[in-house]
Image 1 (spheres, each protein chain N blue to C red):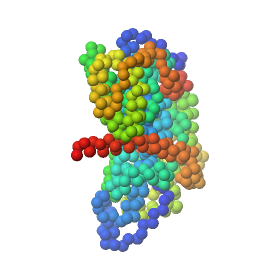
Image 2: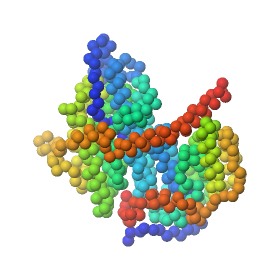
Image 3: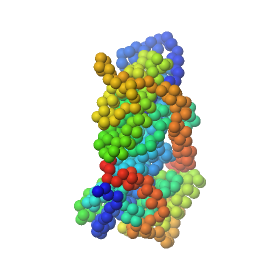
Image 4: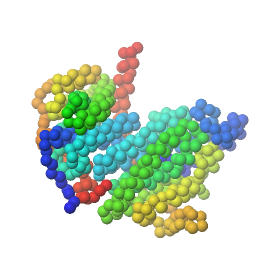
Length: 235
Length: 324
Ligand SMILES: [Fe+2]
Ligand SMILES: [Fe+2]
């Protein structure tokens, strides 16, 4: 009997793995959308590389849940996804993409660094690899954010707008790390980029509980179309 | 992906200087020509044209396959496709660098592409309509690229030959990956098999056109052969491709869309029907299914990236002033 949905027994461990994996998959998906459309050929390759790292992290995490990775990615409905809202927001312009990558990667890197000493051997092993990758994502995004913030009036304006829009979505990604530690990574880069750090105020939330933005449904409709249209087929 | 033999005219002026004689003697002795060596202007022009067309093809070729990254049907396939498309971008980068050694800038070459003055392989002006197209492109388009490019690893111009060695290794990997997608589809459900057959039906003839016009019409093959830029004629490469590919298609259980395709026992070669050269010329002239889309997508990426590139330059200039 071909399956078109999956029921998951969400133990706390599985739930936390899904949150991490879904963050990586959804942000990887968004990043992969730049392929063929980036501002330079070099950046094209860098973004593809980052997307590949993220998709690789998602796969390792899904596999560690004991469920089939493709069932998790392709057969869950939006309310079953546990990613932070920030990951699913559309790419916007290059400033938005870079600012998001920076804010998210800075939090992920802190998380992975801590998780390298986790007692869960799967998590510790994934963290060891993911931390190296994520440290590079932070560097790459930070370098761009500085160029954009410090570059021209237009690039500064776009970078500041992106930052202001994204800030209320950062509460979810720092919930599993120390926000002060995260701010200590973020603030110096914003300063070098001559960007104003938005005020700490009300934060968007809901992704971890499956209450998403309007965007996730569209993203999944696209991503899942083949396995959903041909139930049971192997690819 | 790769360069196609395009039917552009290049009149190599019969150069009878001592330099030209020495140059030809080096070529005949299978020596590599390096960027700082003396070379006839026509040799330089031919190479710039061929290498840049090849680079443009790699970059434009990212679009049809990029079309399926967000819809790849498994995470393993998604990662493989993303990595493949990234490889193609990397090929574009090495090739632009190889062209730059001949004294042309990347900006100039990009400008030629975006203004529609430069050509790229017309295969990328066909649409990718189903997942099977991704398998077919790997199997056939990368397969045809390999046929064309293996001899280019011995091209007389050093930087191009060296770029091709690395590129060919990756293209063979793409080809095997594409074939494996086809194999999975052909052993899958009836719908998947039909998807594979439909893709072969659409891509087969355009792939045969990738080798360029028939030898009887190919204007500058002779000069390119004498300069050892090209080592086999278009028709010879096309035949090699057909001979290698038909058994692979038979193994998949697919039917080639050519009722005249048959094995000639005497020669051991597969004979095939007549290629629609009108279609080839039409697509090359800009009137294929996706010419406009492909060029518009590149133009749009370039235009929308302008403020980003400006910002990087402005920041670098500020840094330089600070350092001074
Ligand atoms: Fe390529
Ligand atoms: Fe390739």
